[in-house]
Length: 316
View 1 (tube, rainbow, N blue to C red):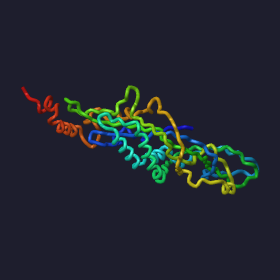
View 2 (cartoon, helix red, strand yellow):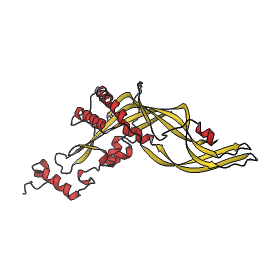
View 3 (tube, rainbow, N blue to C red):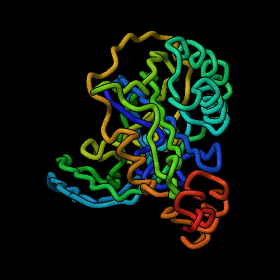
View 4 (cartoon, one colour):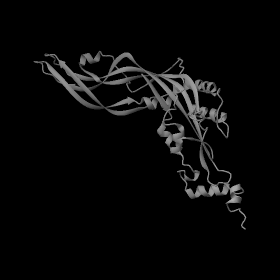
């Protein structure tokens, strides 16, 4: 099964704090667009005892139960995000693109993809070694339906079952966007511009990469496969020591995917319009609008606006 994941997540980029400020009036964001191939493996093992049941020794017993348990599971989405976008790698990618994209258009050359791939690959090994599983607590519903033969006298144990899965994570492409606040020649208020601008319907801020990143191996809780076992049987079952942990391995495969005909939604252009207001003075933060207005007025001294419409204009 093929999955898609973009990191940072869209919800993180709806706030100014989710963007990198690289100048007083200049902000930047870069996203990794991942393609993930998920495969079910043959391994099946067992975890904790969920419930115990007594049966009658003189007749067959049918156990039909549905119950809830709180369990710890691996958060694959968050684990993949933190592994693919480490702080060090984010700084290096941001520096590479920001250094290559020059004002006023902030476009990059066609060969930057190869340079970014080298940057990513050089830090990938350390990123895998330092990656950690992000887990969370969840309530799961388990269903048991099983007949127990007559004469069985031991306790019957309901046991959690786990199936082994793998996810191969590839970096399909990167997109980026600069948000710059500027004044017009005769204006005072700094207004937002998204750069680079699309060329017609084409978003030129996308950089094809097509490289393998890593493979995740994890155990998935199978809530419909919980069965009853005696204590003796349970001792001999294959066990999962840490069902909430993810194992990382290097991945050496190639992909060759064309860029999507339409950018992933929401686009960075859409997210920037949510995170940033049109006017610089309307930004939300530990300041007041009046303080930002004073800054703009102070910086406008001597400008064309100052002499035409501001305090420096000549009075007739």
